[in-house]
Length: 295
Image 1 (cartoon, rainbow, N blue to C red):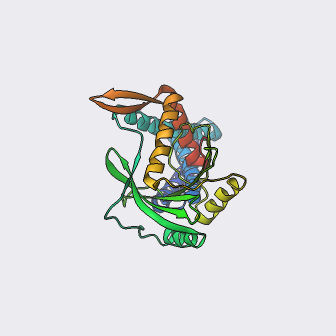
Image 2 (image 1 turned 90 degrees about the vertical axis):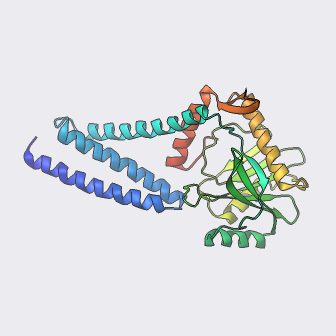
Image 3 (image 1 turned 135 degrees about the vertical axis):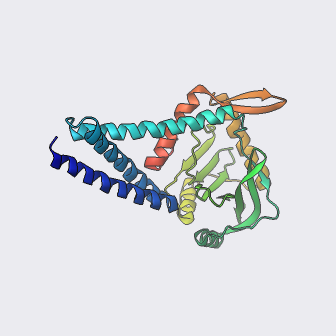
């Protein structure tokens, strides 16, 4: 390859490295789901381009650049897939109870210091919600998420907001609305970006919208979904109701062989079944690059 072409690829490589460092810098500070999604696509393309330049300069200078670019994109795809599968493996070897539980949170600040979510709280209260209680989601008997729970004035709809208790966590705030029909159907609308990948009971009507970060829009979606239903009053205490839903999810996923229940040292722990790994990988990829869950 001619020296001038080598210099050209060196220049492209330098520019791509600068772009990658800028994208990583912005992504680590981004709290916007759609913005993070766009940045991931840019990062994937930039890393593929960098790998193609490196292959062109140091390994196969005669190969078409389009082929090297495709190779670079595929290598990054495989690297991200390997990271996801390593998380799945760690879940299985840690003997970690995968079912989270809600408990009443005491001596906690009610609302995290977030102007956007305080504004969302005010908007939803003006739409007919009132504070019911403050809960936390416990994983491995340790508080993991803080959850202010609101209920509509007619007590037919609950709003569960979720905030990470770790200030350095990349877990974004999310919200879940649910109602229960007189027939027993659970209507659930949420915008969580967390990977679930499991199965919902057949009596549940679930809508997951990670890209809908406006609480008012999420509320409007839930109202449209329950427009022709007959939601009943939610008389059960919020924490008990949420734990009942969690138990239903757990039982459904054991029944569908997504989870395996094992007794270890006198306690019950859950492992991911063989087929669960593929579903988790697929949903993680769909959420990261398309903003949509598997189901």
